[in-house]
Structure formats: C-alpha cells, structure tokens
Image (tube, rainbow, N blue to C red; front, side):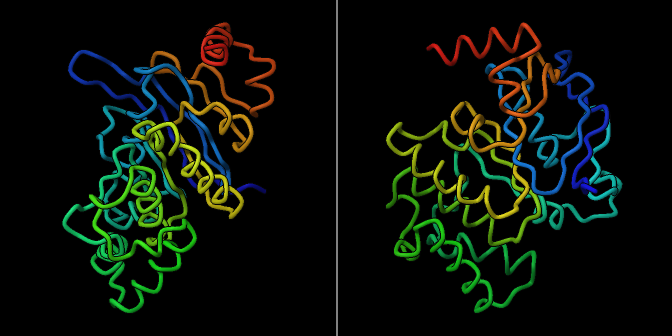
Length: 246
C-alpha cells in the first residue's frame, strides 16, 4: 500500500482581495515525481511556497505524514529539513563558500558536527559535479553551477520531499541541461519530488505524475502519457498546444 507523505486539503491563498489558489486538494505518495505545469500566474509557485510555509495559507491544511504542519507539533525548521526547497534564484549565501553553504544548515538545525556536516556536503557536491568548487564563492561560479550547489545544499539536510520552484527559469539556455540532468539522476533515488517547471520534456519523460494548474485550480492531474497524449480538459489541450508548438 502506498504511503502518503503529504496531504493538501482545501488549500486557499489570497493576497488581499485576489484569491490565487482556490480549494486545492491532493495527496503526494512517497517516491512520486510530480511535475506541476501551467501558465505564468496560475498559482504554481504560490502553491509550493504554501506547502513549505513560506506563504501562510489563507485556508486549508497541509499534513506531513498525518500531522498538520500549522499545529506547531513539528518545529518549522525541522519540517523544512524534511520538506526542502530549491528556488529559481538559488538563494545561496554569497559571503560563504560553496562548501559552507552546504554545511551551515546541517550544523544549526540538525546539530551535526562540522566534520560530519562536511562529509555529508562533500558527498552531495560530488554527486552534482561541484566538489572541485567547494572553496569557491557563489559569485565565482555560473548560474547552472549555483543551482547544482543549491540542490546539494537541500540534499545535505536529508529531505524526504524536495520542492523545486522553476529551478531552471533563471538560467541561460545552455545551463538548463546540466541542472535537469542532476534532477533526472535524483528521480531514480526514491526521493519524493514536486517540480514546478516549464520544461515539458522533464514533465513528460521523468515525472510519473503531471498536475496542470489553471487560474488557481487543479484542472487536470494524471500520468504524463495521459496528460500529454490525451488530455481531457480543454484548457490543458490549449496550454499544451501553445507550449509544445512554440
């Protein structure tokens, strides 16, 4: 029987009078790779930020392994280790080295020793091809390299779920491939991933589930072959026709 890691119940989010998310509900099973697609402004990033509590939901519940994350029963810092996030703008500390970016959180939140944290960080930096840049500062590396460091930093916290908020959207086109390759490799490890993306190739060939958001609601949700080859919702068909033929 599949295990639900996350359950989103009747999630709504408003900014003033503007309701961006309307009654969103879905479950996330352990090991699923879910791509979240849709037009700009459809609520994709807001939904991810609510799941990570970077935005406070206006209404609804987010359950992590059955516990409401707004109940206070799970410390927020601990929850964000378990449900990590990779941002489109990297969010690295510019005054720290690549290695220190991957070590500081482990020491502060997980209370690991410097030695243990470095060993863990170096392992993940190696896996994303960035160990040779361990002593570099973020300003000395490219956008694609920064994003790979950000992924290594998130992995160093031993997450159960990793949320990716348009991880390639701030990159030059030639750097997109190197980040997608790391994410493809990650998809084979059993890590649960929710990926807001405009990369339809990733959504189609790497995900095992695709969710199409339209104007703050889940318009369609299913296996990639169903969504891409036989979408049921006219809005899904219209969106895919536009992006695939662009």
